[in-house]
Amino acid sequence: MIDKIKFHRAAAIAVAKDLCDALSPLCEPDRLIVAGSLRRRKQMVGDVEILYVPKTDTHPDGLFDSKAFDLTDLLIDKLLHYGLLKKRPNSAGYFTWGPKNKLAIHSASGIPVDLFATTEACWWNSLVCRTGGKENNLLITTTANRQGWSFEAYGSGFMKLDKSDHYQTKSERDVYDFIGLPYLDPSLRK
Picture 1 (cartoon, rainbow, N blue to C red):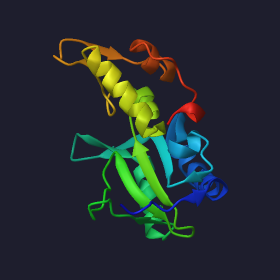
Picture 2 (cartoon, one colour):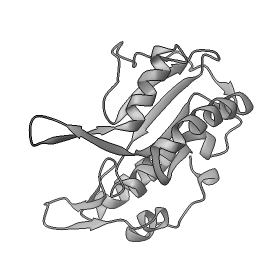
Picture 3 (cartoon, rainbow, N blue to C red):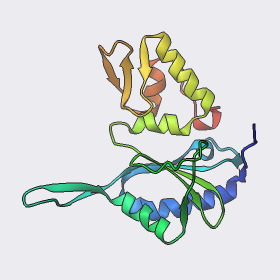
Picture 4 (cartoon, rainbow, N blue to C red):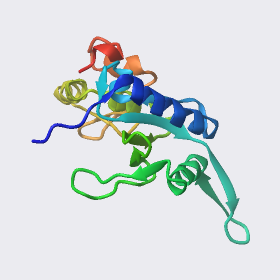
């Protein structure tokens, strides 16, 4: 296994700040955050992970219809066009560049950037999942499963394994409380 290149926290924060400053006007209020290892306060990081809820607008689509479009995506496309970001292949060599997940590289620094769009309903689960770390997410998932629930990493809460019930999380702490785990500050998550 090849070790992943790590970057100093200060360099990654500079990239995150520049991107968040650009994206902020096109995201829903209080729904743009740097997640991942930077949020967990690691000194060396493998990438910058940004989670956001995009603003949308509509434009005419036919005579009587209108179509919604993602304003954040339009800006990200401009960042690509002007060479500030480049698409980055995933571990299988394919580009991940969809409406929810975009894997990029900050051109000037070479630091990988993961852009994750979510919805207001899915914000809290996405925040916990994208903050990580791997052990934390595995603990949440396995604890939920033992109790007959499935943690919806891309959803709005927990779903009964037999699909008979759903619980929508209301905060980051609620993700932990619902399954009886003590809340962990992001800096303590592994």
